[in-house]
Image (cartoon, rainbow, N blue to C red; front, side, top):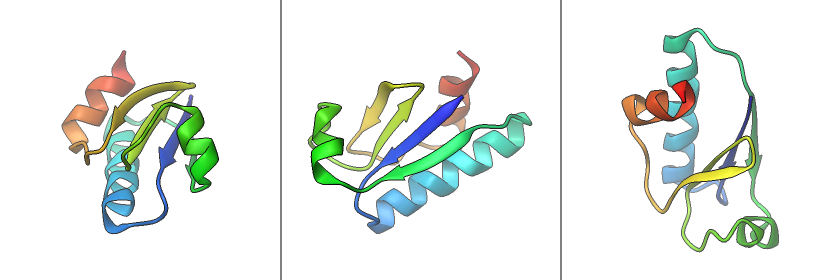
Amino acid sequence: MKIEILGGGCPKCKALAANVEKALAELGKQAEISKVTNLNEIMSYGVMMTPGLVVDGKVKAAGNVLTVEEIKQIIKK
């Protein structure tokens, strides 16, 4: 599983990254996590507001910080 956090490193982006790591730990799952900070790359996903969450190449959220529980539901699918 590949998870990408889209954003320039703002506090919301960092919070989303922390929630992703916590969700993975609680589920006992491994994933490759990367942070995409390049604006052109972020826009290539169609995301206009950060932070964004991309799982296996599919945008799952944009413009808000998902909770650990919300992320766990996305990862389980």
